[in-house]
Length: 65
Image (tube, rainbow, N blue to C red; front, side):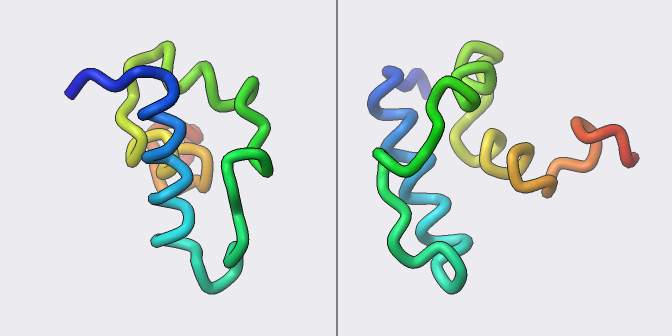
């Protein structure tokens, strides 16, 4: 699926809220440093893959695999 930057951001926020809601209860779009996340979008990562990588759930990207 092709996401616009704004759709992609909204999806990332929704995934973080769902996956990490117990510890990041009130995370909103304005709370995220989108300059840091833009690389994932530019690489063509899905919102889920970006969250996995950012939260070190994608061990291949972090060099631990």
